[in-house]
Amino acid sequence: MIGFGQEIFCPQLAQGFIFKVIIRTYVEMSRLSAVGELLEDDIPLAAHSTVFLLTQSYGLQYKWFHNQIRPFGQQIALQCSKCLALRSLQVQFSADGKSSELKCRLCKATSREIECDGEYVWPKHSMKVGVAYKPLWGEVEF
Ligand SMILES: [Zn+2]
Image 1 (cartoon, helix red, strand yellow):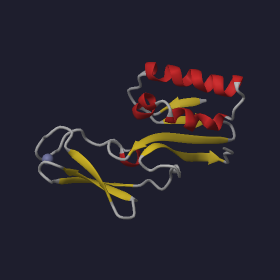
Image 2 (cartoon, rainbow, N blue to C red):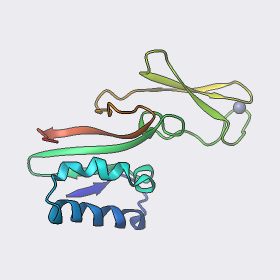
Image 3 (cartoon, rainbow, N blue to C red):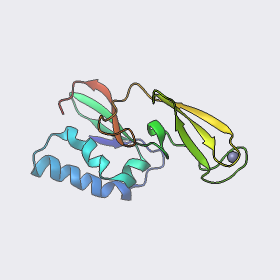
Image 4 (cartoon, rainbow, N blue to C red):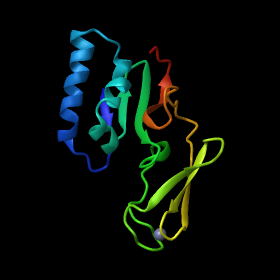
């Protein structure tokens, strides 16, 4: 079963993704756990919602991240809370890359610290943009 975590979900964004999952799984006979790869190619859906892959033997939750607009998969404000400028917040990562904070490039106010969620498995190929997953139960073979 595939589920979506967005509270106000836009089903039009999932149509192509569902079609690709069906083709990949039932025509190409790939493992269902390849859903994460398909989600990396479907940025509109990945940016819109977390995706759940729930089977009898394992469960996974996928979320999309981008180092400047969704650090560690968490949405950031579009507006500085101090000077109210739009799209002025910049993400600055700590030296170890495990946390970040938002800093307004106009008024220099820092507004929020975001920690790396250790429950997620982050892709080794990139920490700039991609899809991370969190095991919910069971053992998964990728
Ligand atoms: Zn500001």
